[in-house]
Amino acid sequence: MLNAAIPSTNAAVPTVQAQVGIGRDCTGQQSTADTLKLLCEQLRPQRRVVHAGDTIYQAGERFGNLYILNSGFFKIVNLSADGREQVVGLKFRGDWLGFDGIASGRYSCDAVAMDTGEIWVVSYEALLAACAAHPALLQVLHAAMSREIAHDRDSLMSVCTLPADARVADFLRYWAETLAERGMRTDEITLRMTRAEIGNYLGMTLESVSRALSRLARDNVIGFATKGRRDVQIPDVGALSAFVQRCLAPAPAMLQ
Amino acid sequence: MLNAAIPSTNAAVPTVQAQVGIGRDCTGQQSTADTLKLLCEQLRPQRRVVHAGDTIYQAGERFGNLYILNSGFFKIVNLSADGREQVVGLKFRGDWLGFDGIASGRYSCDAVAMDTGEIWVVSYEALLAACAAHPALLQVLHAAMSREIAHDRDSLMSVCTLPADARVADFLRYWAETLAERGMRTDEITLRMTRAEIGNYLGMTLESVSRALSRLARDNVIGFATKGRRDVQIPDVGALSAFVQRCLAPAPAMLQ
DNA sequence: CGTTCGATTGAGGAAGATCAATTAATGTGG
DNA sequence: CCACATTAATTGATCTTCCTCAATCGAACG
Image 1: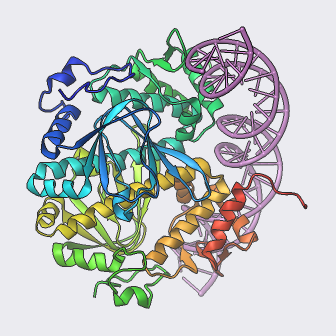
Image 2: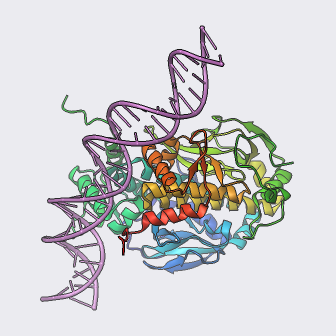
Image 3: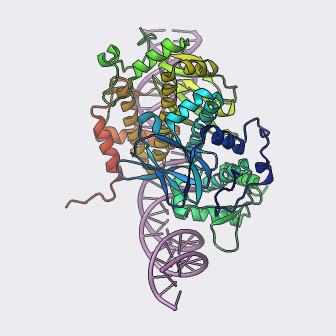
């Protein structure tokens, strides 16, 4: 069985809907599980178990493989010549890693596992050969690249147009929706990132992240689990969107 | 002849090196001109002249075509449900437009011409067919998508890690290097964007852009042309990088 | 059980936003 | 071609947000 091949510390688990593997979801897109099934059958990829902290590839390393994330969770870290580090992406089940290396022949980022998981290794050459035989594979590949481009743009927009509190709320909303798309629980998510990592990703300090989370909790938009503040309860994802809109509202509209 | 098919108001013109069309540049990459030649011969795309303000596609419109920019200059504008607008990309000669539409079947941005130019229209279906026959085309396509992903990440890093002045300097450096890669003059570039558009792209206000440019001019890192402040003289691109580093330097290192 | 790392919270300061006034460039109709 | 209207850019003054610095607290781990 493809799902749950590797035990994960992830609190969010696949729901029944994701496991039965119906053909397409309501949007007409193939579900993550179906796409993974297709890829596994067509590509017969090498499977590799990773643990938190493992690096799948590093900036500067010669490109050769693409990676498909079957379980677990990765961060993509961009490095500048002068030593700045920037988390530029988060990868979940069904996402591809390594596209940035195709053009230049070298990866331009580090891909770091944030949790135990399983990654599928596909040689780019072999993938192209398989795509020639099975056009559906090419569609899947292009869709994955396209999704990444579209999401990177949304990230830039978020960083450029939202105040700090809204950015954190939008980050949680995105995380919850990403899990939902994969058929996982979203009422309680485990952020396997420190405040510093979240802040780096969102372009703010760890203190600002902490304050934003405290305010979200005070407004009952999120809750914290009993033990530790790494688990975030999200009773209503819509409330996060509403919070973002409230941050953007021009005037506080004083009483009456 | 492919080059200069359309008269452009762009002050930067192709140099001899770009026009002779030698196979590959020093990095082993195909030159922009060669790639365009290949695409034109293999795809026989429909050519379309655009003028400043023309929209090639809009967010929400059904996806069907990809576009290759042969001359001119585009901005890509992301729109949020609540009405925020964000310039998320700038496109120059040789760049592709429309990748964001592949996954969802609809474009997620507006593509707006900022100058007179020529765009090549390629149906995605026809492109896939051509790629099946000519694997080199697929390489070109994937390289273009990969470059876009890598550059989007650099943009995010710039916005997240650089102070305002450095962001503007880095923006000019990127613009100059983009022109240089395409064999164009970089000692004087014409920004066909208002300060407001630049500020939007860089995540700051138009006033901050103006102040940053004034400081760059005061430090002789850039110069302004005689008439109008839309043309920026860049005697030394390296000076822009040095300025960025100076902005990042922790301590001013008081005299001794 | 102390050590370490991460998170929270507060106080003060700085970068950049906002508001406002002026100047320069561009365009328009007479 | 010029007077006028319009849009873009610059610059200054003030204010807000967020960063920086610092202290405290909590959880995890050996």
